[in-house]
Image: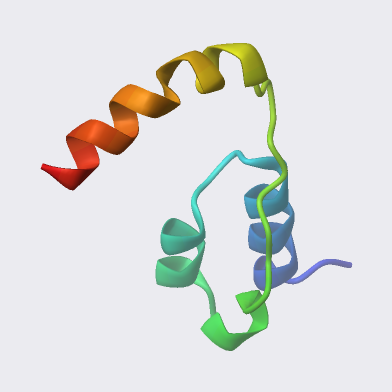
Length: 60
């Protein structure tokens, strides 16, 4: 049997939902501390080609 918080943790790790959404619905939000999202369908080439523009826009 799984608890709601365990399932929310799994969904965050899979990248299905954000940690903020999981925290909002968790019975014990502290159970989600340290959860890291695994990159799913991560396109490193596309990210690196847009990284410079992201840095420029973020800084302005």
